[in-house]
Length: 298
Image (cartoon, rainbow, N blue to C red; front, top):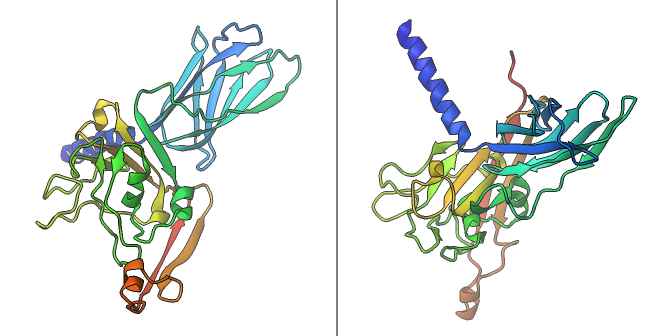
């Protein structure tokens, strides 16, 4: 019985550590119209995807913080006696820290004011350099290999080989960041270190290393490529730190089915085949899949 308890405690500890590598933080200051800080204001963060609620109380200086939040869309609701309730909507990216400051207006009756907190172009809460690629971009950008690592080279300071769009397979994932070696990248999927344990690198080579596990684009919520000044928890390697979060469930059941296909009718002949007078090669690729999610039955 003791062994079971110790094992459960260790699993809970490791799960918390893994979640900390993919979560973000929302913080801010609550003030009135005169600019004075409001203490003991009730602040609630509500996830738009899962309806999860987190509550906090502003400090004497009006500050509040919600650490370890899953990435996604949130509404921040602030209420205090004698003031109208203020609600702000914001989007939290993976590993990011954003500030949502709110100003409360005096009100003698119950009133609700909704504002939109725009995501800042420059993340002033953290010195880490990087960009977030969300699920919408994964669906809209051309990705013939269906391998998310092909999009890592879109970040500033990264480079990778040119891939043949007419080829089959998942392509190469040998990406260099900041001039570092191809394998000097850290990749975390839902907080778990996902590099190849055989070669201890993230690249593919001719010695049996298959590189990384590449989840289906439909299973990815978003990922962030951090190319410099990231914190110690992501500082395993000298290249980029890639943090990926898979899709989670929602309060309602939902699902989808898809087919990804390519053929020689839709795909044009390559430049090199045309230049040598060769016919368009036969290409028939059909990949079927689906996903289903919903709430956990209690």
